[in-house]
Length: 560
Image (cartoon, rainbow, N blue to C red; front, side):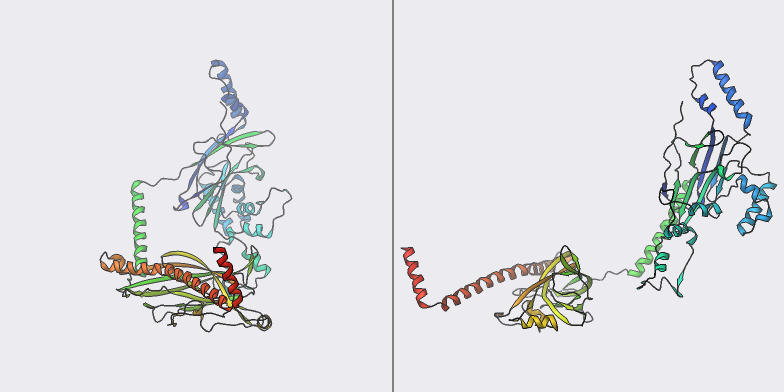
């Protein structure tokens, strides 16, 4: 029967919260000679004589050149466990070649093995994280498949990541933590910091596949498995443990071609039920203590709104502005509170953004502010039944500032804050006042400045206006750009928790507030109709009398 080889030699990644020192890998290595392969292919129906002769031939060929244990070996290896190869065993016997502390430690370990009877392993050995082989192997790792590849600076520094895991560099006597932003980074600074520094430890499980009696040659060393563990508990195996799959194959080219197979099994000790329960209790106790610590930081009492009021939280953001003539835009804004609304005395209801350059996106010049603001206001529930409560309004003006510190008004606008809780995105168009003639525009272009509003609330009906009609006749404006806002609104009231008349009263107030926008839109339509009728009446009165008589006569003829 032919061998079912495992051809999947890629990496496998695991994550474990347990200490990596508990990792155990069982490695089984066996030589597959041509004769033994022939024995596996003998049918079971052959005669006893043929099977006996083949088994004898296999035994004789195996015993003629091999020492006991040379063709098969099985061993369990722990994480960072050092197993010396024949070459290292002979090297570290000599005290003269031991210069570093690690060499002297290995010398003591080899002497201890010598006193206990020598090495227990024959072909399988390991290279740990501190060995020279690990450094050389990580330096020699190629990035591309080209044979003429020359490592870049980044590849060389990434190869040293494992050795830099405890390196805490300083720049000009100031730690990196204190200097979060470097405005003028040098080329050397960019090279040194363009590296992912993740702590990694490496271990190699090796095999000396030299012919019997020729152990100890570097060219006969082959990697069976590479194990890497980083500081986040991620374990990488290449190749993966075989499990129920077939063994891996390894062909060796030499004076005679040999075939080896090996398996990798995960044999770490499992935690019994009692230890799992104890570990679970420890974690639960740790989580409970952390939860209590967070509760102590936040507080156990939930802050409620005062009785008889609606608390309104607005966490807003000025997202962007676009379609304006000039660059370096900034926005000044404030919120006006209508009747029955109030705010804490310490809170400022106005603000200004940073200046922002525009960038071209889909043929439009857009300035991305991403400027956050936050307001907290209160609405009294004692609203008269005959009054129509108004919702707070956010007024703003868009300005530009050029290189010579000349500023220009780019537009005025206003936004009625959303009357529903949740997230809302609103885009508002703006306008600016203009004067007749070209002198005003020339002044705006060359020396800056433009007509401005003394009161920004004039973009709507000002709160101080007490009349019946607000006339803007003769006021010339020009449409400019648009500003995008994002609002996150929260409503809080004790009435939401009560099913009595207080909740009904608050609901009626909110319904009237929600209907305010509809009522205002209806009033705007009626006002537009009235203004159009007045203009038609004025135009009719300004026409000569003979034209009116002629039009009336033609009308009578058409009716007849």
